[in-house]
Length: 159
Image (cartoon, rainbow, N blue to C red; front, top):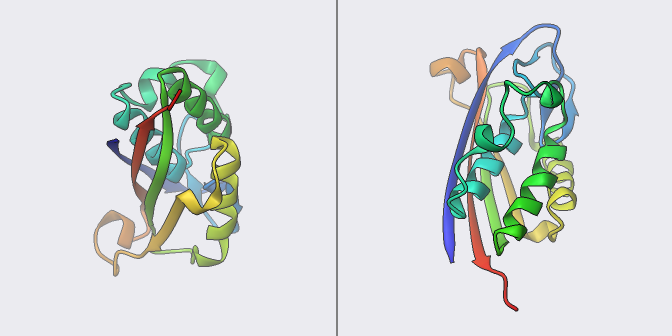
């Protein structure tokens, strides 16, 4: 067994969609980034790559590559699962936390889990997503941005 940790943060800005876990969440601002800026999926990808010692999301999907401009992070997650499998590993489970003062995330979490499970080709019961506020502290608490943390446990594929 191996474990990996992931983290991501993006600034909230006007005239962008708020996408978390592949779900478009109604809100007056969205996250700024080269792709869809889905901080949850980016943290999950980094946890997957970290567990397998495969560097990080920027190494595999650089923001200098125009083919990733505006891309759905679910596409990157699906490709990450393939990279992990090709390296000889499979996901045991993922636990993640999104930190955002607003909007309320609880109603959207089941769909986030479903989206990520489908992209990874694993059962939904292997993925957990939690939403937390920052009690109005720091950049997330003031509504300047959103961050996410994730851990992933992997195993070698049994042959």
